[in-house]
Image (tube, rainbow, N blue to C red):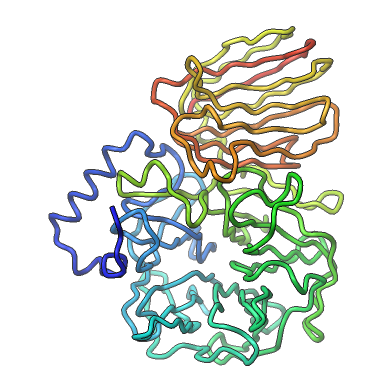
Length: 487
């Protein structure tokens, strides 16, 4: 179907009940609906927004176009959880119903202040010539979940030197001062981030550009997020326009981080190391972090990418969110691990322990499960797992000992996605014992390598009958300890 501008900017409130029921019916008939990931009730989900802990619950909002699998008029949709595992859909949180967000309530973040949750987001507008202008807006949510939007934006103008690609404010507090970092594009079409400060979250002062060692790094920086962890400053962002470089930057757009000294809030200087990708898989973008109630730094990402078609599109929905991850810093690198609360999902444990020699063993079955595999005493050329497999259909994650690389191959995973960007992703991992920790859902996989040293996040679209889990060793033998839990 060809989505016209008018169709993309239809309002949810203007659509008949019959049409909404038809969309829901089409969504619910889809064989690839997830069983334990956050996914939209209908339409398209993208960036996670407003991730926060408030009033005894975790709140997570996301970008939502309810009427189809395309980027149209964006709402904020609200879901919440007491335990980061079981999520309750609350419904629409922010509607694009003011002059300052007439063409979409775009991404933003949240912070608790004076017993309210302040939601700062970008209001997107277009004029009759379809020229964009963005505003930064603060809405407030009270303990009853009621959200009040202001009459006016808190930041109405874009500073000199920047284009109207100016969005995605992320809030934090240092001492008594609130700060916001905003993704921006300079007039010379290079990406950057800018900083604002406020004493009350309503009156904002422009401080200037965050000074990094990346003056020409893509054409736009989306979804910036600054936080401090283990005495370091960490800056997470999603630069658009990076060219592929070896195993790096293979997706249409990338997400990654810089680790350095704490951001100097007087000079705005951020001294940092190299840019590292957060995720090595096919489908990961626009992550956002928050602090857990116990002080852990948590991250959730969009399990998808812009400008790609997915097999679920024909069923009027697209995308989901990743599972929450805990972040740590080890050896100058961000380590990501599934939050410990996810063990609550475990049911019906199966275990296998033994040796595989030049063979492929079909040991388990499953469509929705958690799997932890430890490979030791490896003298094989290749070891790995084939999952969501039946006959020739399979997704493969393997360790290639000769190249010392982990490879994810979805060339035989089922319905194709984004093949123009390739069907394999790989990264270097030092030789030694290899641990794969997989969360497999109906149409996705998240793979944590060696306790979060690397992560591969991907959508896959196999047949429902493809449920075999096989383990292999080629060119030698390996000891395997595998534990699987149904979810």
